[in-house]
Image (cartoon, rainbow, N blue to C red; front, side):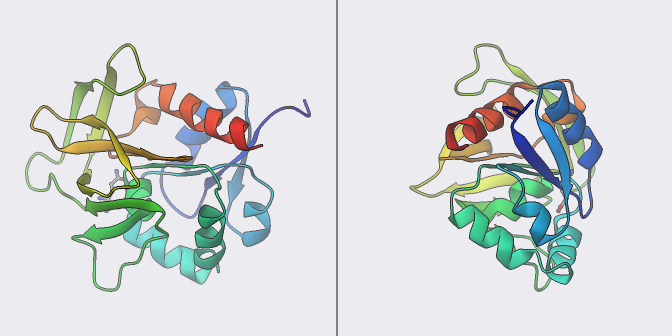
Length: 197
Ligand code: GLN
């Protein structure tokens, strides 16, 4: 039991339960993180999908923004899906007025980039490091507009738009593997956690 990885899911808003279920099915000890003291207890963190502007605001009222920025800068493994990818981006476009991010990933992420009528869709994607394609669910999703020199694109749509990136122990996907029974991104995140723990 003592060797179980301790990971958290930022539980201010969004699809916290779906991530927690995938992570505990993979054998991790999962806790909800809302306070700095809870953040200090985990060796890795998932930023769920949801509404990035709401999570941003709540993180500031819960006094979590600075501790999260510090933990990310200190090398905490983090996996962000959709809104979580937006929150992990150093720079965003299409945010609401005053919207901030935790940052860490050297990318520009375009929020609500697929907008309009085609807000949600599912597609199969090849991902660097996986031998079979991923069933990717996009829900009012962002995409990665620019990949800076420190980050690396690991998946793109057929038109070239980047939808998954990795940078050291940071992983971000514009889509939601946690809703389609896909576990390989969470396994990849847990391998970052294991490497650091
Ligand atoms: N559009 C949302 C945002 O801006 C993200 C949607 C999602 O996480 N599924 O945060």
